[in-house]
Image 1 (tube, rainbow, N blue to C red):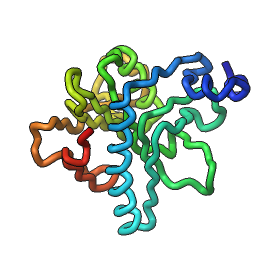
Image 2: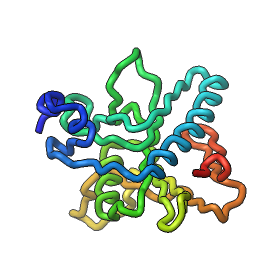
Image 3: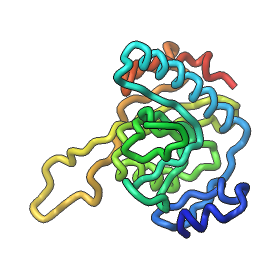
Length: 203
């Protein structure tokens, strides 16, 4: 399917689709916890992004949720829709967000998400060169976050034997991991200083 064909679908159907190189991938709506924790993370990240932009006006950030990120420099038939997103400020309103604009993409993982699906999505973000990927795992038995992991893009594969080449230019490596047992909350300094307490992320 092309982007043009997707635009002709009813909105309630189109909003449940991602296009992976023109292939239709259905997005399942998560439970209410999924939406709530997405919004709580958006709120916390937005607060820190605004502080950073105020202190360093030459670095302007926007934080949003469920916004399409087009993975190629041109065309719109290859995109993902992260649960939350930090991107550079764009030239004007209503602009498309390209992978080159995105700094952080994040996914909130409900218990029903399969590891293979998330591995595939993470690999596509990495192949597009997005510097930071957040994975927020929800607890299986309670309405709470079980773990937050931050992955950084590694573009140095290290030495490989002659004739062996990596299939993609970059891959994510874990740069930080937090659970509610970390009582001081989430602390990370990229792409701007971020401090999130667990109280801010309560359901």
